[in-house]
Image 1 (tube, one colour):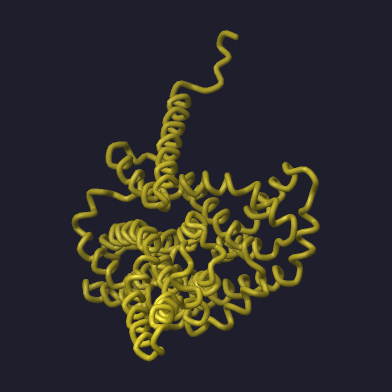
Image 2 (image 1 turned 45 degrees about the vertical axis):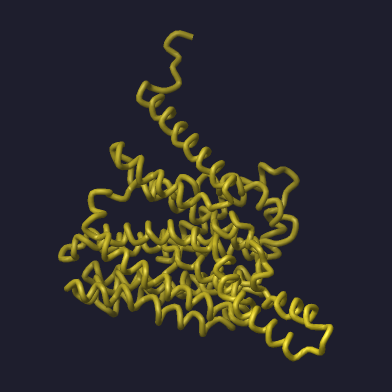
Length: 428
């Protein structure tokens, strides 16, 4: 009908632009699937390139909501893969790895901040940036590479959960101090956040089966709307309590079990992939490429140092369950920093007196680690083979010398072909 136009011309152009971006992301996802790599680095680089040639006039509110939805869906889907009692047991047994993680990965950022002449509070912020790995990137990499069922994944997951739980008191404490509040106010906010997190964990353990029965329904539409609605409400309520919505979404995923977990995984996987692709692309899009040269050297130094520290963290966290390959896969996956690091840097970005280099430094550092980590973990098995092959060859030679005549070849083959449990035998 004449005059019955659904959208304005500007709205139509926006639809075309969004469609074009999705087509680009689809082509990158095809390329990643064909080569066997994670698509995350490609999405990040695509966002950086698009941002350098197009105006960055995205609504910050829209970007923030999209980011929160992506993180919530990613961590909810990760929680579906595990049983909450197993995760709680793993958390208790991984306290040593959590302490090693904090002791190794917080100091690099803090020390570099002080070396740059910053006050102690901005240095604490940069320490938080280098400390916490990106749960959303790690979850996507594990899914892309088919490693959710690997022997090293529970230990790595325990480290991620401990980091996310550490953010519960850290974020409100730092936010209060940056806002000019007293230490007492910051401690109060931190205590409240810890209480909310503990309550969510207790509810998930006690009432998980009841929640699964209540959400179950024969129609997929009802299940989809119910689960997504619950996730958004829980995530929003958590954020109001200064707790990560992603952590609570992960706990909700842990609490859902049985056939409902399978249906939720099937229904929400496409939605998760859509929001995740847009999240990683928009992150690269918002990085100011003109600020990169001034902070690239410092960011690269921090990246190199924290690659080593995260490798050590992954090694310690999975030493009891995995061989060399599994430990390297865990350490390399943990290298990625992401959403929390940007949130932490954003707390200080607009505070008077904070060095203007903090935000671009954090952004470039996160971008480097987010690109490098999926590549490192993709080749972790090859690195493990390179590390263990000489050792296996030496064992085979010693066994052959000790073996009786006529059995040399067989014994050498047996000794040389042995594998560490959970190590190079796993090919993913």
